[in-house]
Amino acid sequence: MSQIIESILQSARNASHEGYSKDDRTIIFSSTAVGALLTVIFVTQALQYIIIQSINVP
Image (cartoon, rainbow, N blue to C red):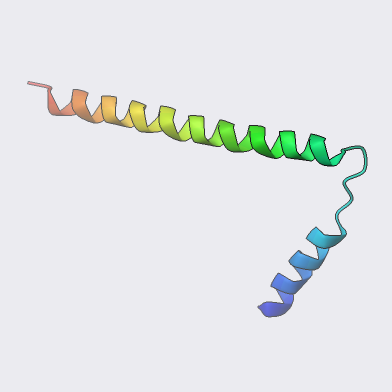
């Protein structure tokens, strides 16, 4: 199992980031993080609405 993890980590270390500057990678990472957070908020609100609607059904 540890060999598999080590292989994955080695592949990640050797990954090429050609074409993207450090600033570009930072913006991409930050945008992805913000998008994930907004998605969690939206899904949480939607689930709360659905649960409340199902409780209030006569």
